[in-house]
Length: 444
Image (tube, rainbow, N blue to C red; front, side, top):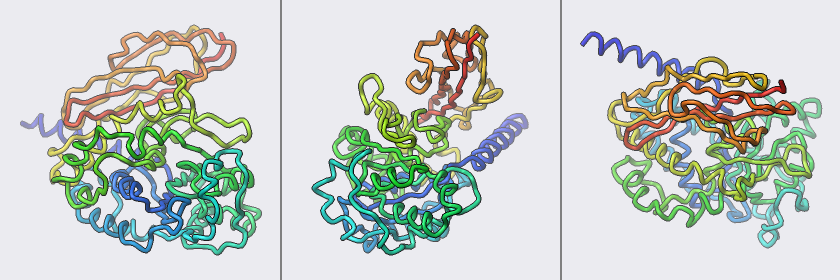
């Protein structure tokens, strides 16, 4: 009995250490939502992941599809109220969930001016990287949302700020203009921190920003269509009914759709701290997809085409993502930690980025990896070839164990190999944890 108690105490110390590390490295996030019905669904899912980001603001905006916005409705307020009702359970599973008072404090209204979108609806298919600029925000009024963006970007914190455009980017465009005109000595530093994930260019902001503020890293995601948007996951009716809406608390009961239809969710998947390091570089790939640089701009990226399929980099993670969401919805009603499933905890030896010479034997170990619920775990190492600059296939020794090795290949120039350590537990639902290891191989 004493040994069991000691093991439990050691486990919680380990979990606490992992969470502390996670807290230090959380990506900074600003969400902009146009309040469309699928945004309601995405927001419910996002609230389940607010423990995994450093959330700076949630801003209600408009878009060419929702030209007046929806801040005059109470959909978001109802969700915050329901979140507050399950908060006491959520923090038993992860103490980093923000209080509902904090979420209210950082909620703002951005640009919802109908006239700022006049005539754009018929041009929506022209709003792609490199397209014609259709507006400039010089004469627009500041909004609480745009001013908050300015405030966050002017902070001395050098960490990237991930601005997510679930709808339009007008609010960010006005903020960037204000930074440039009112803070001329500081705006380049401020804007160089921005990584803006755009679910399409749902107003003219994308083209305006990419051509006037080259310091901003712009991601253009079109592959959400056919993976996460309307009618893409029609096999999930039972999933939503039984794992979200029914018997999962008041927040899940607010989920407005009958199946997974969350066209905007990839924007926040990209910035989650889940070991895939998706947010570190657009070309890495992860839950939020993988991107490649456009030829016209130095810091504008669009969907990568992997194996001839631009949707592959999002589609490949769908089951993992939905299983994870299911577990977090269980947290809403599980009053004890032991009453729900949790991700395995990966602990690797040494640095996650390493440099070796061609011909050198490389050994990677994650022997201290455990499952906090005591579930059986299956391990595998696999090469994410599209993410690395070395295009060949690596021969891995013992890829289904916690320790793997391979011989660094011959290369003509410095090349990177991306290996993913993936651990799957036997709980219900089965959950995955990941750790990306990046090996830079130098010529012999």
